[in-house]
Image (cartoon, rainbow, N blue to C red; front, top):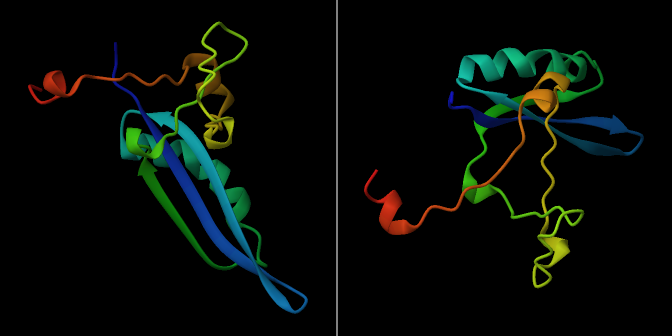
Length: 119
C-alpha cells in the first residue's frame, strides 16, 4: 500500500469591514504523498481565496497534519461509543477534494512506545 499523508493548507488574511479588520482563517485538507503533490492539489482551492482583492497581507502555509495535532473522534453510528470521551474535544477533519473523499478514509493508529522506538 502506498504511503499517503494528510496535509493542511492554511490561508490567513483579513479585510476591512467598516471600522474594524476582520480576520480570515480558512483550512483545506488534502491527501498527498509529497509536498509538491499537496501544493498542486491545494492550489485551485486557495486561488479562489487569493483572488479576492479586499484581503490584506495574505499568507498561506502548507503542513503535514501530525498525530499530535489531531484530537480523537468517533463515529457514534457504529458501536464504538466511548462514552467517557467528551464530545467538546472532537476535531472534525474533512477532506477538501471530492477525489480524495472517494479514495481515502482518515484513520488513526496507536502504536505502543516499545514498538515505535524500534523503527
